[in-house]
Image 1 (tube, rainbow over the protein chains, first blue to last red):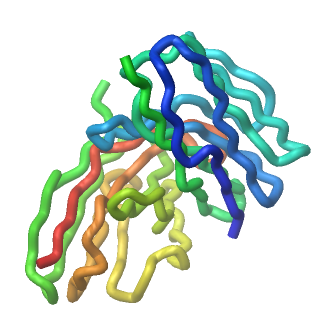
Image 2 (cartoon, each protein chain N blue to C red; image 1 turned 120 degrees about the vertical axis):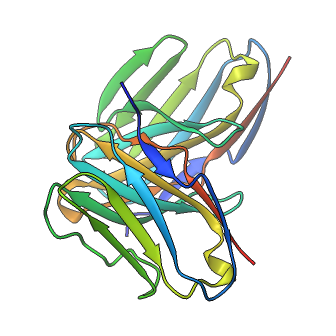
Length: 109
Length: 114
């Protein structure tokens, strides 16, 4: 299967700081998504981004498919951003989806 | 509109019993996914359904696990002869189509095997 590596595994930020989370994957993919799992376990889809750049408020993401990585940017972090951020990739024809092990973010007031 | 609905939200059962978990996807979503998340871990892909097509079952961890989807909508995940290592949160997601749409997750079923 496809290997998905996320870094850093843990991140502590002071409220208001910016951060970059990285996702590397081992094979060509045509489906890449970023998710946020809040402290209550709910998973929220942040971006569907197999290539290119997208922005949604304080969050943005960039995927460079040819180099097999994606970046998630969080600007002006807030305590509500705390939780685990997952990157997940898939190949449409292979009917499987692979999650990374996540980046655990703790934003302190 | 309503999101992905999973039931029960919690299930505690004795080792060796069978359990059935239910997922009701977002109306109109043709793709449905099952995942398992052990405590503090990432998500493990189990199985995926696209419409009424037969699923690829190779991601299921053992032959005690089975899944079906009736009428291209509601799905059930069944675990027979449960073992303690089956304890986890079982998550279901759906998307408008399989390959090119974002997945939307339910709140999961927390399964505890005593």
